[in-house]
Length: 558
Image (cartoon, one colour):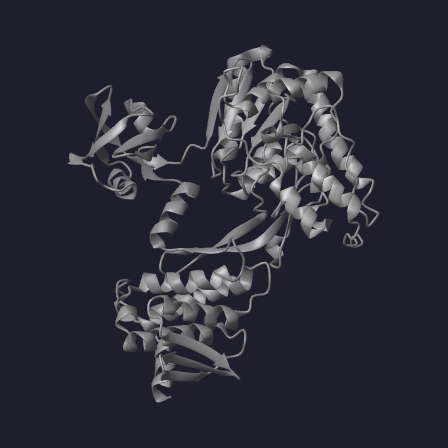
């Protein structure tokens, strides 16, 4: 007992010298205190700090299976196999400083009794304990150590380098992207070049993260790289500069402008504005419309997603966020003019479109500003705030949930397109034919999506299995493997069909809202002559379930 008391008392003073490679009780206590304080202050739900701390401490058993921490009748007991290492009086539930000290004391006791724990570096212990603790909160809160946090900051805010991204291709490292107006681009480096050396050092066998570190350095310094192009070695001397990762790429497809948005960082919205201006100048008066390609975009800075939505929406809601912290509650509305001057828009989405991507897709769909094509999005539906930690790491804590302009939460079910290309039985031509004949009814999945939280479990599971992402493959007869893109181009070349599809998408929401006063499920629209449901008949199954099972949850008063 005396040893335990001394361990806790020793956490009160700060050491003068700190070596991150050596475990230090004071440093560890400061780290855990910052982590627990961040969780307590920001998480969307009130956290159970004793539960999180206990789960975190027991994660040490991954290093030594004999280690265990138990909380019984207000006493916390630390054991190794059958031996009691220490026993403590449990602090008050929200006494974060003492729970942090207890966590540190448990580590110290384990280190004194286990070689495996003693040999673990501090970062390993931090990661085990904190990641285990935050995994109890939700599936999106997470911990990043110092190195991972540094990379994440570089993606969000920029870094000092030459402006390239690297990709492993077998034994080679290829430049997968060369950012526009970057030092590398200005020097003549091209996408697809194979990197062979950095400052005279061959890179064969090195990991990408290590090669990236060789290329980066202080602003204004010069780095020499060797690349292989057309089987010939070329050398470039490039001056490092501050670089923001390029996230918006413009491609012209005839009279249609396509914008591939790969992520959302501090420059994404301004880059999108510039690219739209470039496209309208490039194509001129013959421009038919815009394609915003969000496929594979896993998100980023959510306020940039709001800003991109605002580029194309002149009025109305964009996003609402709700959380426990006062600053987590926000309502965003369109504030600016439409930079495209009302050009028709198609948004491409898939199962990897997440978070910030879902904000843009939902905002443009709910404003009847864009037609959505592709597959159901990921369904992240939450925003994480960043807590900086003393070791240079970061804690990403879920603090808000996102709600679309029409009021449904993005979480779990995501955003559904009006056309699920994976479930088309007749390809792009069938969609165009149905629109021309005016035989396409509002798709069932859109009607059901808006009330997904009030479906029965069986109906929800059926809905989640619907509208999967289509694999980009060669489509027989037309030579175009990207059906999403082809359909978008066809729609934009026929403005009247794009307008008709916008109306169909909107009518799904109107049909839904007219039935929300009832506790019964919304009745799906009658099937159209176009089979949007696919051979598996998944939506027919949902409709059947809705007709057979009327045990829906009552809607809370608005």
